[in-house]
Every structure is written in structure tokens, then in C-alpha cells.
Image 1: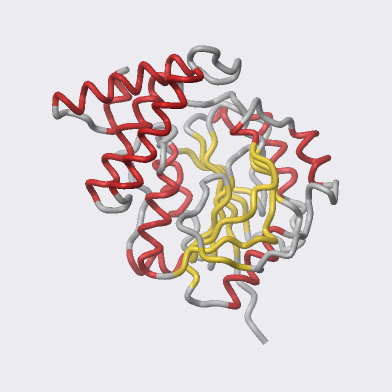
Image 2: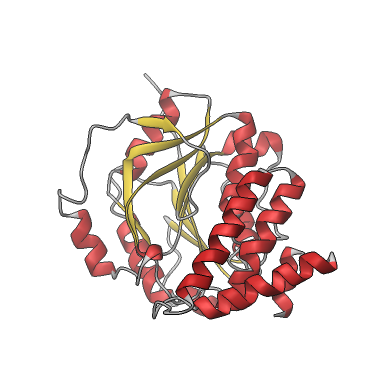
Length: 295
């Protein structure tokens, strides 16, 4: 009989305490109970309304996703798996169960991500009530004829799971040179860990990414990161140069086209200005991820 794996759920959050409270409430309904939920915020007010309990730990760390995720890693040293959820990701109640089954069935898996049934980050966003209704609808929360586990290139930051023994063995940390929202920090971390095992998608570990628009990086800063971060990651070897060229080109093209008639929920013109500032810094030979802190 296989030994059950212990799981720590880890959430980095900033500026949306109401959404965070709702997500934590739903995470407590998992059919496979987590050892604990650990929340890391930059300010106490970011976790307003949450109270520490046996199953919930509140921690504080510097502003920025990588800084906060590293604090969360430090609070998961006694667990088998760490599962990172965005504060606006609501999983199906069997998410952890299927995730644990995947890691138990294949010891070569080092990183995993689930199947996003709907992604509000690609549109105006999804409310918590709508997300819960979608999870209750079998037409959306479906079980298509997909392989239980399939190899993928990287994890998606809104929901990703890692084997802690591999993280400890290789001393892997989130890169704190990627500030604030830290564009592509999820790809960087999972690709570096993926050198030591498989990265997979667990198709029955499902959920809704609400894509809440509050607490996001302003358009100009995000636009700069869309150029600077892939270049930085390619230089350090975790992101291929051909991927960088496609990513940068695609984002600049999208920002240029949509800036003519921008979506009300995306600062396309701010992103385009940020893209331009990054391109200018490339010509000056001074492009770095940290530059967004001065914009």
C-alpha cells in the first residue's frame, strides 16, 4: 500500500483580501485534505479577515511574487508536495486527490500543472460566484477522454505542484530578480526543476482561474517585463531564445493592434509604452528585469 503524500497549499497574495478569503474557504473543501494552507502577503491588510488556525498559517514577505513564493517554500520543508494556487484560482474539490495520485504513480514527476477549465485572465475576469457555478456544471467541469497525465513544457503559475524533495535536493528557488508580478517566473522555476524530472499536466486536476483585475502590475511595467523578462531568462538558460523572440514579438504585436481599440480591462497603451521603453533599453545595453521598479 502506498504511503499518502502530505500536501501544503501555498498562496502568494497582494491587494485583494476578499478574493483571498473566498479562495481559502473553498480550499478547505478539498476531498484530499492538505496538511496546511500557507498564505504569504506583503502587508497584514492583504490577508484581512483571515485568522490563523491549525490548517492555516499567515506569513509576510517582501512585495513580489518570487519573494513571497520563496517564503512559502521555506514553510513547506516538512511536506511532500507544495501546491501553489493563485489567490483567484478555485479548484475542483478533487484537485489535490488527482494531483497526489499522479505524483504517487510516477516518482520521476517533479512538477505538475492542472487543467484550467476557464481563464478569466484572458478576458474581463470571472466572479467567485460564477466560478463556483461553472465548477458545478458538468458541461464545463467535464471529464473528456484525455490521458490522466501528459508531458508539458512548463507549469502555469495559477496552479502548479512540485515535489519538495527535488526542490530541496537541488536548492531551487524562485528568481527574486523578477520583481512584482514577475512575468514568466512560473516558467523559469518549473523549467529549472524540470531538468531533474518530468513536468506534466494532470488532466483531472481542474479549476477555474478567475483572473481578478485588482492587484495587478500597471500596464507600463507589465509591458516592460514582457520584453525584459524573457531576455533575462534566455541569458541565464531557462528559456530558449526562439521562445523569447516569439513571445516578445507576439506581445508587442497584440499590444499594438489592440491599443487602437483597447479592451476596457487591459491597459494596452501602457503595455505598448513599456514595450517601447524595453526596446530602447536593449539598444542602450541596459535592459534588466529590475528596471520596472523605476517606471
